Figure (cartoon, helix red, strand yellow):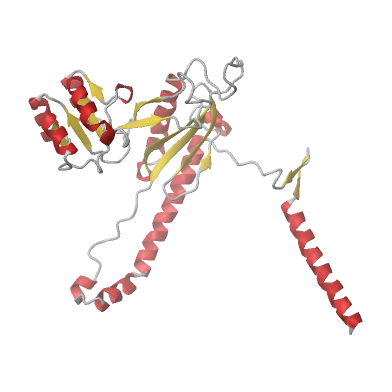
Length: 329
């Protein structure tokens, strides 16, 4: 019996060793090429593939179409289950049916660009507004603060502002009569800023709604404010994060390839135009080298999709392959 027990233990130990050895070989798999042999493991991860901007957008749009088809099929497949559920809840036969076609989701396509910037240093905290040629596909709710009664009336009636007014509107927001939770942006004229800052700085500031000349939401001329109000659906605000990353939505998946590429081109050109003279994430006080890159990494993604890494040659406006496919040239 002891001999049989030892044999079983040896057999179990050999099986465990074989399993662990197989897993180790799988993790450190050897990929051989005619030129060199590289190892893929936790210490030597496989390089993330990079795609040109047109190819990346084509891949994202194809994925969104696949998800739209999947959601539509799921909706049609569960039609009978929805009807039975409504009947159990007490609905009649007419109201138990679907009250219209399935409203599928139009996903937003966003771009994340990692720049070689340190926002803690002077001149490297980029912030501004870029006008997209084809807009964002989103309706923007705007509030206008001004002491000009005629301007407030025009902004609310023909400009599409959600609320417009002066000191009375400020008091209504401070008393809680008018909410700013559903507000996307706020525009203001210069003369009302002292009252606005004193009364609503703690309300609008944390939400990023305080009018600021850096992002083009503070005006001295009434005509400029009305013109900007009509273009708010095309304007996108950007700001560098702590690690130097800029997130910008560039449109909806329903825009198609050409419109998304045009919007991405405008974003990249805007970030190139505001490029500071000195940049870099190295040690403070250290002189910037000659070959320091401004564009580090970029990727695009849809609302429910995975990110796709971009070839930086097609993102940098100073490159001859900007917004093009290098393989087709």
